[in-house]
Amino acid sequence: MADLAAFADALAGLERALVDAGLWEVDEPTAEAMADAGAFGIGAMTFGQWLRWVLVPRAHQALDAGVLPGSSNVAAYAVRELDGTPSGDRLVEALAAFDAAVESR
Image 1 (cartoon, helix red, strand yellow):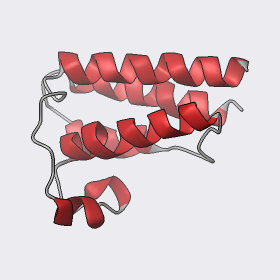
Image 2 (cartoon, one colour):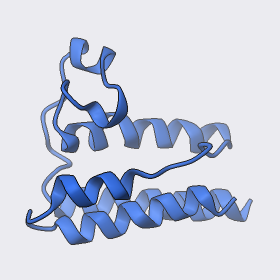
Image 3 (tube, one colour):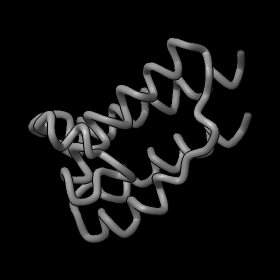
C-alpha cells in the first residue's frame, strides 16, 4: 500500500498548493461545463477550476477505491498554463509530485 500512501501524500500536497495559489476557492463550473470537462477542461472551464473540481475529486475517488489512475501528465500541461502566474512554480511542483506518485506504481 506504499503506492497509495505516496499518492495520498501527493494529493494532500496538491490541495495545499491549490489553497496557497488561491485556487481552492474558484467558482464551481456549471453542470454543462462539468459534462464537457474533457482533457484539462479546455474550452469548458479554467485550468484552476478543472484542478479543483475535476482532478482533485477524481483523485479522491481513486484513493477511496484503492486504485491509482493509469497515468498522469498534468504537470507538463501546467507548465504552459501557469507560466508567469503567482504561485505557478509551487503548483507545478505539486502536480509533478502527483504525476510521479501515479507513475511510481
